[in-house]
Image (tube, rainbow, N blue to C red; front, side):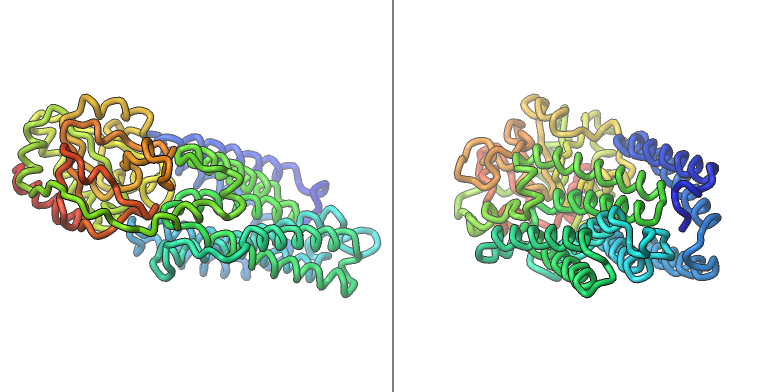
Length: 475
């Protein structure tokens, strides 16, 4: 790869244009109404960056690059066509792992053959500044890869979603973190061609892989949306570091955008859950809290309803607010839900959707599913925009959402979710709560006291089947 000062001006201009497109993409994706244009801007920016890179490639031959693109693009195309929308969190975690491993492989290749990457100094060794970039890039990439693998296994059900709490895990993580920093510092200060320089590079890489596992293992399923956002940030910083190694300004810009936007989103979501942002980075996020209650269900009387009851109550209402959660995603009830809302609107009922920031398994999970079912954007509202309306609402229809509707977050200081902003569904005149059975709890491991309130009617069934039955009774 050419050095920065030898890069043609048109290449730098093309990368700048692609960077602007990526900024416009992020801006567009901030709202459902502009998300399509945001996606188009991102695709255009990526196309410009890829074509420009192919035009100035030097490290590999063009046929090798095209074969790699064909293989990767083919896998991506098949995956995109076959993947279910309910499996999007797992797919995102898998893609993050690939970005992390790509950064590791680029760093390893540059370490093995630095002259091909144009990062050697006059003495024939890797330039000190390049060692810093390389060391940070492979370390962050390794953490992203191993952490994303654990996140994928938890989300996909191959591994328990409950936290795995190792003894003295914070001390272990701290020791590994200091070890990685010390190894990178040694790699920067000593000749990379010496045995010491070679050993510290690979030891730092191995320790980074290990700490990635250890950071995500103690995190419970309820906190996975923040984990996905955090890993997204890590993948961006890894790509930015490798951009410096490759002297590629497009990678630097893109990586910095992904890294910073992911970090900001993680911070916003932490505030939405009343959690510490530092605790997320430290890997102890949610571990102690989720483990505390033991997942016990309280044996109390509750009011059980039927599809006929639900259809009658909603048909007679002036306003219905629907609160979707992961249970809707699992049963793939979004299309039946859209049909139900259409029937209600035909009868003059105002229908709105209330979305909690951490509903589902990743940021925006519910928004994506509702968009797939063509639910109008202007009917979907975030927590802070709709919470005040529950008190004037006839029916709150909760479908598969648990922790984000639990009043204990506002009243029970001993609860692991205490302080987390929740949707005020209990203030509605009637709460219809769709749940498979009373035998389970939410991902936070606590029972929901909303189930046992006088104005709550439990609809115990598979979410999709229940909504389909309600549709039959409304029609």
